[in-house]
Length: 284
Image (cartoon, rainbow, N blue to C red; front, side, top):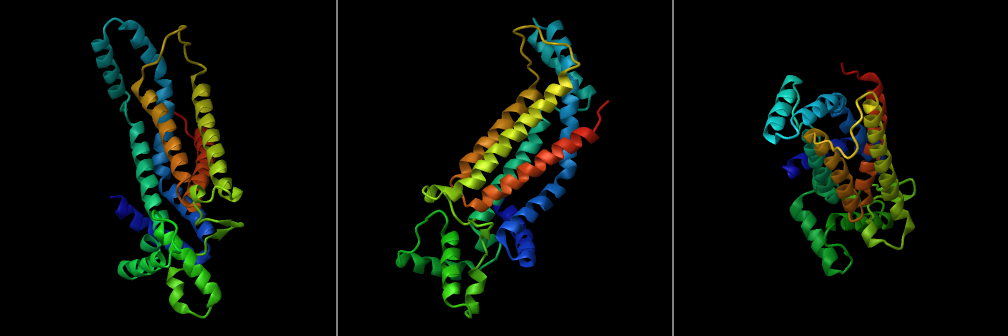
């Protein structure tokens, strides 16, 4: 499944790259296109979030009324979700889509010659084997990235050699080499710029989301001291909101910077999207 989506995303990214001839700029535009395609789902998620927050008062009433009858409480809560035409786990769909995007785009960034440039696998493996025998390839996990670096160097030495072009991708972006992997270049401070910005944007995004939820709850009845909410939708959304960033940060340290750039731009657009949709979407 991930291979299928990586192929599709590869066609899109390569199409954009052919226009702008820069991997970083192409990745930014690619991210914006993906966000635009997912806008209907984002609108639905925002509506669901607002509606679930407004349901908290009703849920608390049920919790108090049936606090000694867990089975009846569960039944009444399911009836409430049915009346409101909501699923207790509707927040999972967005997280599943994000997970598919995360892994599929990781596939594409890890193997850009396969998914983006559509280079013949047999011919490419021969070149990789040649690099291995010459002891020029340092990475086992990212052989295609190393191949791109090697052929970029060869192109600089032989600019008239057109046979090298299909193995070339311009990964220089604002002075950064997007083919670099932080784990392999610990002494190079520039490899931390994008991951650090991504981490900061992640916490900003989560703070914004929590702030929106707190703002929507301000008119509700306050919980009694020590009382805990057990709304499964809110608990699921909270867990997923932490799990995906933690997973992404971990991967960004062992993946090419191009992947971290995608997540950074995605976070920035998500922040703008949430602020805009929060103002535009009203739930009765």
